[in-house]
Image (cartoon, rainbow, N blue to C red; front, side, top):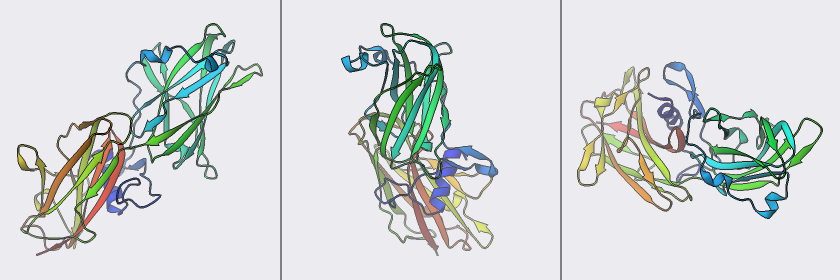
Amino acid sequence: MNAAVTAAALLLLAGVPAAGTARAQAGTQLSRRAPEACGATASIRRPATAGPRPAAYRTVALSHQAAARRLWYDQQGELPIGLWSDATVVLRAPAAHGTVRLDLASRGFSTDSVEVQRWVPASHRWVDLAAARSSAAFPTRGSFSFPIATGASPSSPETVPLRLQDLDTPGRLSVTASFADGHGHRYRAPAVSSTVTRPRIDFTGWPARVTLHRGGPAQRFGLTVRNTTDRSYPALTALFYAYGTGAGRVLTPRDLVLQQYLRGRGWVGLPLLAGACDPGMSTALRPASGVALAPGAVETVQLRLAVAKGAPHAVGSAFAGLAVQSGDTALAAESLPFTVRS
């Protein structure tokens, strides 16, 4: 079972729905780290260093206000969770080298959940910036920095493409850039603030108390994803997880029957895969490769779950759950507990 599935499962088994969903508890946040199967620890999000070259628009002519400043910083006005968003530093201060620093202030989440990368033309790769993480006293304050060798001048600016993303919950993120040339000169750009957003995700059809009978009818449920952001999500995926144990017996994939309604095919069974080192089981909903969702688009998934007639009688209760992700970033999760009866 991969780290993302395991992370979602731990949230679900704890009965913690993700913040920002239709049935979420106020203030709940998705954990960015969780135990991997077999006890190893792994990050839910592993920032990739390889990626697309910065778009050509990064070098467009600056406004008169920007051109008049020795240092300028800008970022996209909306920062959808789970997607990289563009930012740019433009340096006009006459300096051979120095250090650029980005001071972050957040509202609604910790700055520890923010990732920032810089494009390095020589290696054609994105690299992580050095971070000074927030403290327990100030969880909404953090910073990133990087050294720079430059031949910048007022007439020949140095443009540094950056990208950033938040991995946690919606809110606002303000960034103030500064540059120190190592000779006592420090330049500061105006602060830039953006809204951190994510798609709206509604989980439906699963009451607070559900009883499934062995060999009995299935419980219908599902989820709806509305892309309320201004950006396209290239591959949103949904995961199902289930776990049940009692008196030394556990539920296995043959004890549950999960089906998904597919257009043109009707109800189709989904194979549940047992965990490598734990008694849980999981599967990716169709299409496993994910769904592309443009701004304003809506995707609905219909499911039904039943307990097989031969499921062990020692197991009287179980947990199931759904998680929605963008890549390895969890966007929302919902716990689906149920009672098993004969």
